[in-house]
Length: 190
Image (tube, rainbow, N blue to C red; front, side):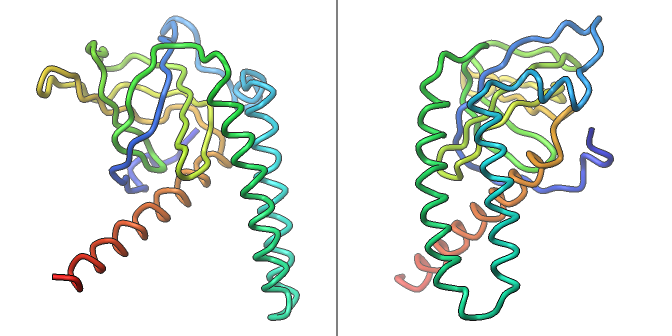
């Protein structure tokens, strides 16, 4: 569970999500139950990313000579992550598909063809292909308003694994860095 959901920023970025309405009479799953709800592929991707982060951190501490090894291992890890992401995205997904338009460490914004009721919880699968992020979490609808024939809905994370929050924060920082780089290139070319 997130202690302070307002502590993370969000970035505009397109992604895929699948929402399944959660019965509000049922308590949200614990962290352990949330792990059990993950598909085998999602568990595998999470484990691979955790192992990679730990290994690369240890290698960086060796010395400057390890940079080439770290870069090579990052490339190898990215290939594995791409394959796992592809497999996960092509599995039969549960829930209603929606288009994500913004994400961060505390929640997501989506476009939906139907309105979502404020206060309802959804079991949510997120796939942010460009950042190789795939995760399962629970979100609570914070706001939903009609915008040009679609519903723009803001969902806050109500149950998410800490490792997944870390993934989202890193991904949002990476997306922001890419946006700033593009903006700088556009400004210098004009």
